[in-house]
Amino acid sequence: MKKTELLVTPSSIEHMNQLVEAGADAFLVGEQFFGLRLAGEFSIDDIEVARKLTEEHNKKIYVAMNGLFHNDKVDALAPYLQKMQEIGVDGITFGDPAVIIARREANVSIPLHWNTEQTATNFFTANYWGKRGATRAVLARELSLDEIIEIKENAEVQVEVQVHGMTCMFQSKRSLLGNYFLFQDKAMEVENRAKNKNMFLHDKERSNKYPIFEDQNGTHIFSPNDMCMIDELDEFLDAEIDSLKIDGILHNPSYVTSVTSIYRQAIDTYYESKSAYKEIKKELFNKIEEIQPPLRPLDTGFFFKETVY
Image (cartoon, rainbow, N blue to C red; front, top):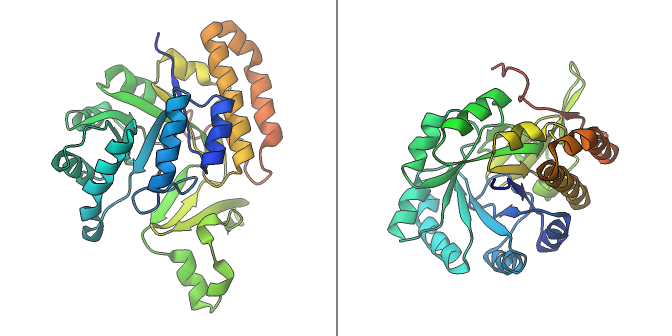
């Protein structure tokens, strides 16, 4: 049986080193110009260093090119892909078909991971992109566990599922937060908005706080809770899901490292003994709950409930 990959989003090279020790199998990195909602900014030089690190420890590195590209960015795709091939990265995460065309024209052979955030909801579409060069489908966060298992049973490509972290609920290409403060003559108060982890939309009616993240790709609003599937991993592992992702965006590196080590323990225990995993899964959940930020309650996302649009 092929062992499921544990994929994590690091915030820096230093953080990657910590995550290697914690047991991560693969990393998703990139820069704002090409990628959306990244836990950290990795320049080409950083990716070169990161690649050497992953080679040394027999890990994998994927690069995010999952932005929605306007005409002014299209010419930059092929040179970037060629550079990634020179570096030797293991995969490119994409959503825009322009990446497929640029990859073909640049004669690049890096595997593609299809990730459109919301529209990866059935195996027909996953296989459609598989026939056009994708080797993996990153499934939408709004799917139930039953839907995910059905997709895996029928997909001709690998399947990746997020099992821990925030879910993006809204994106606008506009700098909504910056424009709001600018309108109020408060622009100087929101420097480095993309790095600010303490900006929220308040929903008094539901007593929720929605984290706001703003970068050069616009404004992103996240769920008030973190999904956590540490005590339900056997469902994914039984189904032989290819990759389980921990998204570290807007979380402290130390938290992400600790969570990674706990998921590593869970996955390894499952492969040693399914019954042993069942015995410790509640304990592992409690460990995560102990380090969970007070403003970020844990839940199970949409895995066990119907999505209401």
